[in-house]
Length: 166
Image 1 (tube, rainbow, N blue to C red):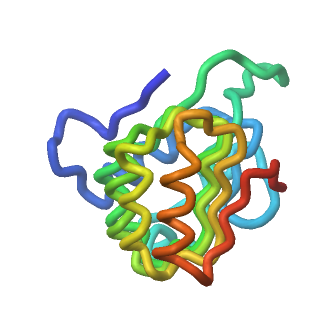
Image 2: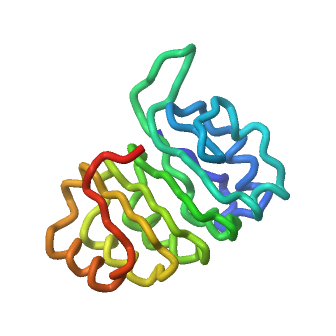
């Protein structure tokens, strides 16, 4: 299941907010450190520029039950989340193209990518995000040991975990 911000090739701030408000309830939905069902419905346009944590990972929850399928955050919409420090994309359909566009997040410190299908092709694009302090790639089979080593070399102060995280 993939959601798009709309037909507009350059989504506006309002498009981003509308997309988040339509977001289905996810098993790890949160706009802070604690999971909270339907948290995206509370967001305002003003919240987007001050939002520090966004957790989009997990499975869709419908009628109290986990459903198959995941969501992908439209990569072009990252640019409005200028205060974002933690982005949890575990168990989502984040693409290599989406990963490459994370460079527009100037304050991103923690990135959780566990259980995704990201590949070596774009994983190296994380090297340019100098603000990163923690990266989790648990159960990402398409990332090679070589590329992990390259990222560790480029970001020596950024622990890269291949273990399950909270």
